[in-house]
Structures are given as C-alpha cells and as structure tokens.
Image 1 (cartoon, rainbow, N blue to C red):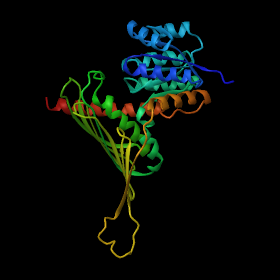
Image 2 (tube, one colour):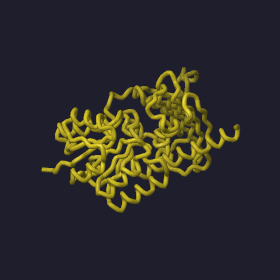
Image 3 (cartoon, rainbow, N blue to C red):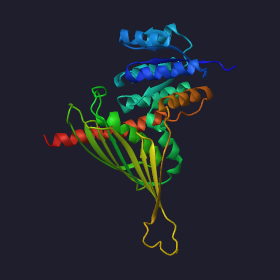
Image 4 (cartoon, rainbow, N blue to C red):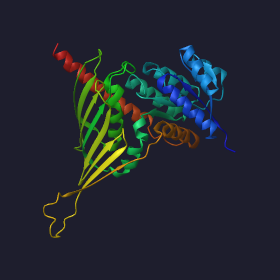
Length: 328
C-alpha cells in the first residue's frame, strides 16, 4: 500500500481555504494525501478552517514544522511578501512547496528558492491556475508556432489583491501562459499603465516582441464592470480563441483550395466553436503537485517558469513607473 503524503496549507484566507478543502477532499477519497494542519497568522481564521476540516490549527508555520514532523508537502497561500521566507524555511526542512503566484516579491528571492529546491531535490511548483483551465488543456498542444498573441484579462475591482499591481495580480497569468508557449527570449518590451482606484497600477498594457518574431499584446484591468479572460493566438493558417471564463474555444483555419462551382464567394476560412465542460482547475493543480512529489517528476509550472513570469511582470511595472515619472 502506498504511504499517504502528509500535507498542510500555510495561509488559509480566501484562496488558501480552497487549497485546504481540496487536500481534505483528497484525504476523504483516499487520494494518497492526508491533510494534517492549517496555518494562518489570524488565530480566528486558522481555528475556523481547522474546525471545518477536522485538522490542527497553527498561527506560526514554524510551529507546524516542529510539532508535525514528517510533513511532506505544503501549499503556501499566505501574502505575497511572506512567500520567500515561508517557502525557504519549508524547503530547508525537506518539504515540497506549491507557492501561490507570484512566486516571490523579487527575482533574487525566486532564484534562491529555485536553488534551494534543486539542492534538496524537492518539488517547487507555482500556482498559475490557468494552466489547469479545461479550455487551455483542450488546445495547448494544438498551438505550435504562434506569430501573434492577444490577451485581455479584466476584472471588477476587489479590495483583495491590491497589495500588488494589476500586472502582478492579473497580467502575470497571461505572461505565464505565453512565455513557454513562444519559447523564445524577449527582444523588445513596451508598457504603459494608469492608476484609477488605487495608488498602484490598475490598468496596464504591454507589447512584447520575441526574438523569433512573435508579438504579444497584453491588457489587464481591475476596474472593469465585468470579468473577461480571453486569449487569441494566431499561427500559420490558423487562429485560436480561448475564453477562460466560459471555457469556450473557437478555431478558424484557412480552407483548402477547391474548384467546386459556387465556392468562389465563400469566406476562405472554416470555423468551429466548442465549449469544454466545467472542471476543477484548483483540484487538478493540487493533484498534479501531489503526483510530481510522489513520482519525483517536474511540476507543470516549475519554479523557473514562475520566476520568468515574475521577471517580465516586474519589468513591465518598472517601465510603467518610469513612464509615469517622466510626466510628473
């Protein structure tokens, strides 16, 4: 019988609570994982989630590591500024880590975690959830050599998440999707953005040109009246549209040349649309993390990929700040 992996969640606020629920569901379904504790700096939050799931509550993750020896893996869903210290200490203790995005505050911090995970032969996965969206999973392998990519990610304003810019909150999702998709170094980057409701950047646009000639145009806003998460990819003789919200996919292809009578006036494009059934992206993400830990394989979203998305996001923020300062 395969030994169960012992799991914990550090930071069980809005998102972390969902992580804990997924681990608990895997425990109940004999999914090879046992949730043994939750941690939150707010005692009432830790106690509430612990009681809900029937596990131990802690207010300090170091106490968890000391009093619950044999912890195999953790989700780190605490505030972004704590990711580095928490993940570092867990990795140093021999614990595999799934860190919510962004992986850390700085690239140097991310590099330290990657080096530590490599040295310890541990899994370091980053929680870029769109990689597990049913619509993305349905078409990812179909995208081969994109030449132009356009992404729009809009959301109504929420007080939660304003500790970072809209680039680190929303646009980083699309950066994570695009960078490995293109697989080429960034040759040129231009960005602009504005503050609307907060002191940070609330609307941002970035144009990225890659060394292989592919161009990506990304827009993100957290001041919209409705949610929109859409990516469009153009490649040779084909155009793919992905709506992450309703999991709808459109694929348009250049029609093969025909000489049939009456076809001259028809559009030279064939289009099909379909919708993927609902899925549980977070459960799929956590199951992938557990599988990587159990089998010693590379995670779907590695620490390096999380680091690369962070690096571009920070550069976009830097360029926007410089542009704003030039007008002051």
